[in-house]
Amino acid sequence: MNIQGMSLGPLGANCYIVYKNEEALIVDPGGEAEAIIHFIDQHQLKPQAILLTHAHFDHIGAVDAIRKRYHIDVYIHDQERDWLAESSLNRSRLFTGEDIVTAPAEHYLDEGSMRIGNFHFEVMHTPGHSPGSVSFVFHDQKKVISGDVLFFQGIGRTDLPGGDRDILEVSIKKRLYSLSDTYTVYPGHGPNTTIGSEKQNNPFVYSK
Image (tube, rainbow, N blue to C red; front, side):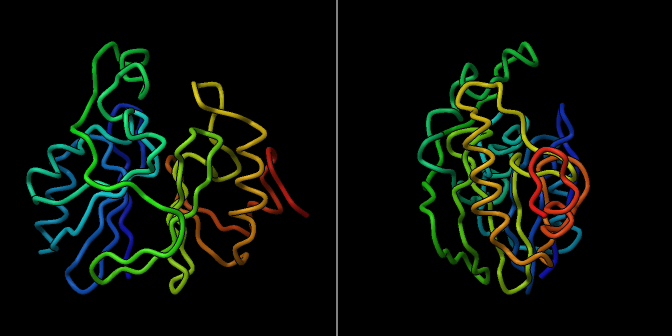
């Protein structure tokens, strides 16, 4: 299984294309749909779904363009079902002065094991940055896409509506840090890291 990251959209959010055996999942298409389409078509991939770690505007900007191009469904946690269509909730008007919205998701994520096409992964509810934040854990490959929860030596901001510093710390310490140190973390912004590195070196939430 391969994961291709792209820094896209107004805040350079990481979009990830997870692919194997010609099938692909698209995680957090935050903008610049043409770059995503170019990669998909160049590698002759067949997208199966769009997965959203959460619904802040910088992670959803290209959702409708990608959904329409490949006729695929969108998955998001139920607690943020209304955020896709509300700029006041996804904070697009506050940060950009524009309304960045999408059509409603077709499916709502439940915590636990999930299979889409060739992909088997765990949906882990990791709130704190936002109430419906989730991480996607690919246990066989020891990889986790953490959204805006855990970064390289950083954490997601908690000063936006629905954010909570204490809840975020629990999500990291009790959920993400329960994974093996060797798991690679693919965050919503910035470079990759590992669970072990963050336990030792993250100045905001660490566990030595």
